[in-house]
Length: 488
Image (cartoon, rainbow, N blue to C red):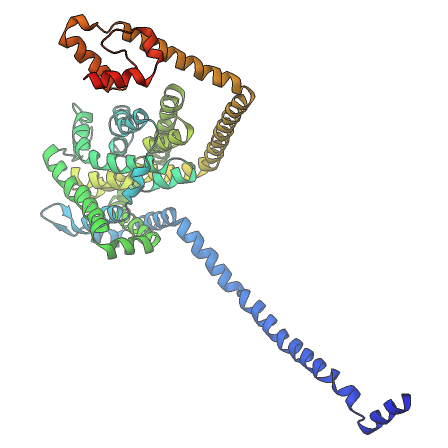
């Protein structure tokens, strides 16, 4: 055997080594080919450092777009006001600033285009609390304007600007975003936004006229005119009509709805840009007067604008949470939205009550500062409020589970009690039926008695026949009922 094997090896010396060689080659090829693929995948997955930095910058700009663009507009207007004065100087029809009007129309058209009212179908909670939100935004919070009017600020435009800021309705999009950050009810926030901005067009002219009844400015050059019909028409054209047109475009033009959904963030940034463009124009016109003002007055305006927001938050918290005891999720939405005021609407109103560019700029400063205070203070409070809402939701869920578990345990523990209760209810119903049958008149009453028995029998009652069998026939069941029906 050994000699035969040796002869075969001598006849084919490479046969013993030929079989493993291809396997080794294949494995080596696989390993060699796998190495560059793995390296290429890791290289593609890892972005260069400059792309990562660019993404971070992009994210930061998008998240902080409003304060950034406002800072650019204010800095530019104060450092070099000449371009802004030239732009705001373009007027038509006497005192209508054309570029400002275009910016305002764009802002409110985009707000209507981006308005998703399908969320309104999700509105749940206390109707009384939601009604209070409307009342607070449109009627209660404007009353603070009487106090702001009496504050002796110099120039006087600062005090009047604070009054106007108190009168305007809630914010267009910032309030809803804040409610979302606080884990509140977004549907209620959207309802308050849409409703108060629509109704505010009609309430603002009347309230402004009321706030300035008997008010005589100490500065004779201060030109402020509140003509209710004129102001109402202008607000309708600038605020209500563009908002409605934008909403109609979203609802009835499918490409417009698709465009609004796909480019929601760029459209929001463009709307904010138009608002900042208005601020740039108004501050450019008031730059010289602003530099002549005392620093203490400017600081007072900043403190008062922030204080208005904090006062509204405290007032609405006391009413909604302490007095009305509204559930946490709904309370957050109503409290936040009822404490916000809209700078775009305030700037729009200011442009209609005075035609002087410098006066418009000074009047707009409290609204601009107040809007920024709402953003920064709201962002600072949002995490704490969100934690409180989540804790309240967790407690409510645990309480619901506990009640459900107790109910099931009680039913499983005492099934005989449950059956006994059902039996008692049946016996009580049978006794009541027997009493009713005793009151049915006998056959001697004529056709009316027979008709009465017939009606009772037709309705499925276990009554007696016209022969007056009494209570014994009640126990006989359907036989008596059938007899009565045959008689009929």
